[in-house]
Image (cartoon, rainbow over all chains, first blue to last red; front, side, top):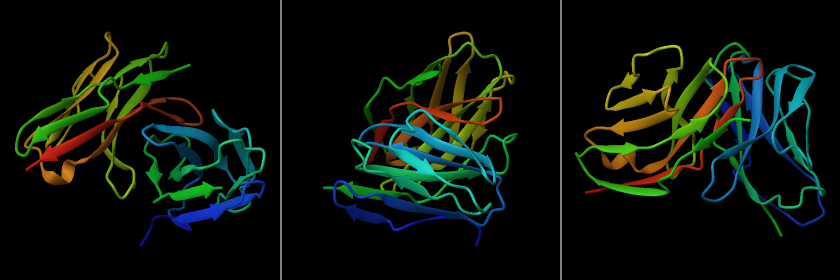
Length: 113
Length: 115
């Protein structure tokens, strides 16, 4: 089955620790995206990547970092510099930058205490 | 910068009835796409319907249809014959037709379908 996987579904960390969220897709999509969702709010873009070894900041990139070493993988690291890291994180992908439909993964709920 | 506003935080509808969710947006762009996404309790984001700004005809997908008013920058979603499985958060989203294809989301409307 083709799709986007995010693991784990729930993640707990202590304040001050970096944590990496996984996002893998087997759809052969060029573009990948990370969004953050806070309770009762819409999604906000953190980072996106149009192609391997390239990525761009979104609206709320501060305190986050990404890498895109492989086409199918786009991990997100939430660093200790992120002041309010507790949120729901969604990964998405699209065929390429010329297409408009984004496919979403199931999300990871990160709780930092 | 583009903004998307959903003025109805919560709505409810009786099963089998029709409901309309509102969305307005602000942009200076002429070429763009508009979307409605559904997020059920599982939190998986599901694309419901999309509209290309250059198309005058309103998009329709089975029980879901939109009323796209480009001059008014309005993009409402109508759900006909509401079903219990339609209970979810609904998000309106905007995408410019340029490199990056970044989505800008509204704050969402929580829809409850009552039996």
